[in-house]
Length: 152
Image (cartoon, rainbow, N blue to C red; front, side, top):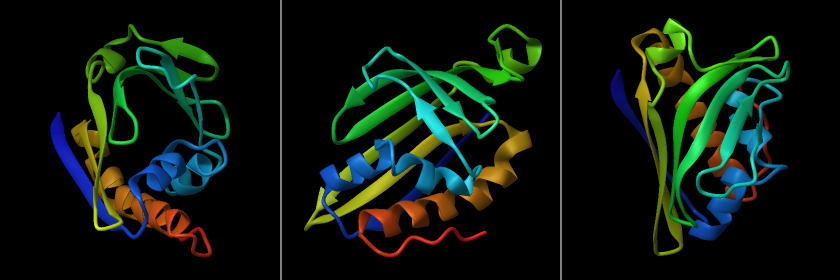
């Protein structure tokens, strides 16, 4: 596992960026860089189960390890869902289970720096190096109220 960090500065207050990150309507838009039709299912409380799903219902099983609105959110990844089945026990999953994904929002002069740090399995390093910058650009456009167009 390697720790990767991706950052962007957004011309919007921290609360607005927070709401864009986790809003039911905006989350699928900015995460379309990873997979069109992405969604998240959770009640957004610390300790709660969180499902990050693609359009087919496959994805990650995580929990909200820490939440300090509007400045910090940490997810602990526990397993995956494939073909409707939850897997938290296979050797494949155990190789990365317990990894974290942290979102830090720092506000200064009505701008917000978003920093995303995550543990990345080498197999997925190239994918995230390409998709995180695109996802953060999507987040920036939406947070700043600009016309959002998916860029492939």
